[in-house]
Length: 444
Ligand code: BGC
Image (cartoon, rainbow, N blue to C red; front, side):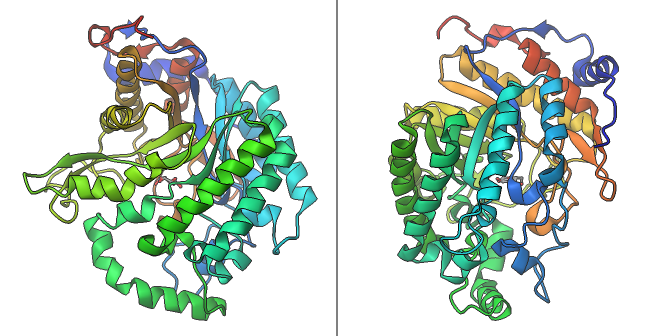
């Protein structure tokens, strides 16, 4: 595959200059075995996931999706080059998801070719020194599963657990850390977002249109699921999947869920913060798990019944929410105050077409993680979303989250300065501009 050569020296120099000239090149203390890497999700990067529920929704007329995922980043065919790039940048882990619809395109029909494919991917990660952080389900499900009612019927639990068991049996020996479900709390979180709250009354109509378009009366796509119905079923599915994975793997690696969590700040004395937390976080901390995956992008001002819209003039990302690199530290501290489980930062990033803003975001976010680690909080990874610019769900290819740009027709990868900047931190543990006076190394 074609890959732009990386002039690492000039990229790092560029990144550091952007991060603040003259800033101390301080070295916070990172726990032994700390994982540094990037994340992607099968559906958003592989391309051609035609057996998945979202492929159907993208091609309805009309559709809610700005553009179809199509070939995505063609990672399915280019994964070797991408893993080589990730390793060459200096990372020691890689987060990826397995596409259920490839493993089980029809109910009970296992694709051994797909299993062999993902085994090769995980073996390649291992060979390159990238610990595989594996998500069994990142939002998308096989068409047949959506058509049977998805996670909005208890009948969905069995098939999901069997799929998790199958994956573990065939590739559990290669997994380093696992999440059963990616952000099973995201629909509950979206319920608090003002623009989504406006859209919610239309959801029943939209879902009916999906079912009619897909020709399946019970059609339920998790990303458009009713969280009040879906979340309790996902909790059960997770619980049984957790047991199945632990048994099939002999407990070789930690298993949990990854959670969408913003830095929730009370907007006033009547804030619904406690109610929000009870909906999006508590049930998942009470569910079985060896770890918590934290995925943070911004902060929210939580009003009585939903979040407040961003203040006029606020510095927003391409996603329309505030630019908030410090949000991650706040979320880690909140989660650590509520659970003793190890925390893995499994996603954090920013959608911007100005790479210097990404460099700055990474610097400030990682400095916050460093402060948490120095204070003795059990945080074990910083995984950036994302290695590649990719398909951002209903927003299509507009938002740029990647450390690496991807040409939409040739698929050529072009690392941005932020790739070398983050790689330098991963290799050296040094965060340019990090203020060591706020850290207390040696507590761990
Ligand atoms: C999701 C990703 C998504 C990212 C950026 C996370 O909530 O897990 O699939 O692309 O946020 O919006």
